Length: 241
Image 1: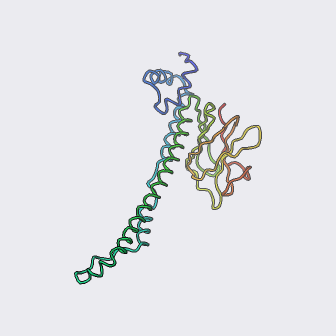
Image 2: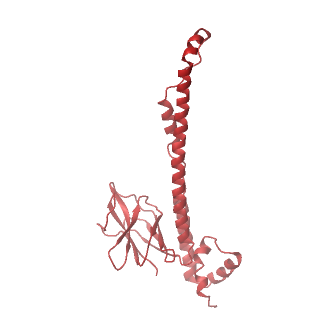
Image 3: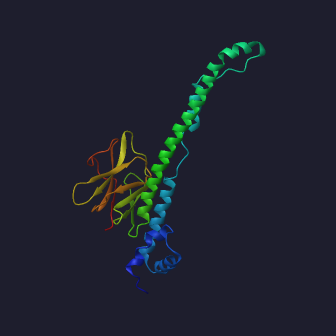
């Protein structure tokens, strides 16, 4: 059995995300057959990446067609073109009708523009979130821990001390009760620090400024969140050093 350098162990995150060169990949795969710890790490990171890929999918803007049609329905429409006997009257009212038609077009254009802008902003936020997630999963020191949730389901935490971030993703977690939400905490020597609300039961949630925290916890809190936990943790995971 050969003894790999510590640098090879650090390639687990990049390997799990297909981020290695061909030479590095062959070197790591040779090592992978002899290192149970790295094999387990790669499996955990790949499973987490797969869950995050599903959770971060960008749906089409919800209700786009319904909102535009509703705006059109509220706008006065131009009447049919009149018969020959009414053309004289049409001539006098043409400017008003053209104004109405222009207003209708403007309403439709504004509706599409507002919705498109909101969709673009949402897509930008999702992309930024994906970038933060990827920075953790691809970190050389990325480590994953998994554990059960007291109310059902399973939680996975991937932490990178180099990036000073962690990613939390849940599988099978039921929706929070009415008027309640899930809140994440970074725990260590001092008092628990609020780390973000998990408004979607699956996540992912990126925890910034992990610092010296030794655990991540999850509690059920009032909808607006709490400054300190008000209920016992339903999930706790020890963070690797």
